Length: 228
Image (cartoon, rainbow, N blue to C red; front, side):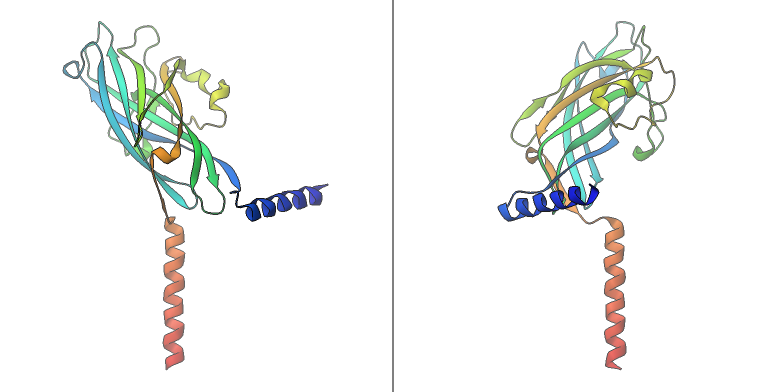
């Protein structure tokens, strides 16, 4: 049974290759830090928009995703600040197996809460939630900025940290960087966008670069010995 499945898959891949149709795999990357800011009273009015930008390298071969977005922060009437706000993004979508190129529509899922350690590097950021009863502010809107148009994300509402892993929309997500009070809340958004409208650049993975360099040096050494 196993061998027949393999043969069927192989035949399908060959047919797709002959037809010029890319063979796809579904990829999920993240969470990555995409927003970090200390928000004070002077930064906010009744509804303040913050432009953010982020660059991620992930996958094999690595792909650099350049993503710009805009978030709407609305302060609570008792807001006094400052509040260290942090955000994570998870990227999911199709990748062309042959080239490693992200193609078709991709889903961007974001989570906003309190940056638990503002002094940490982006790759070490941890996020805790806002007070569920009296949050200092709310994140009410997010827009992803494509090269040709903007994409308004769907607000999924606030989630208690303890409930994130049970949500089917977040299946397979890694929530190990979410810490603190499990009943505290984070704000979540999701948008499905054509990845072709965002800046994506394929780059060699560092380990691949090291192997290529090693191979090149070895080949050079071999030629040198042969000449002598």
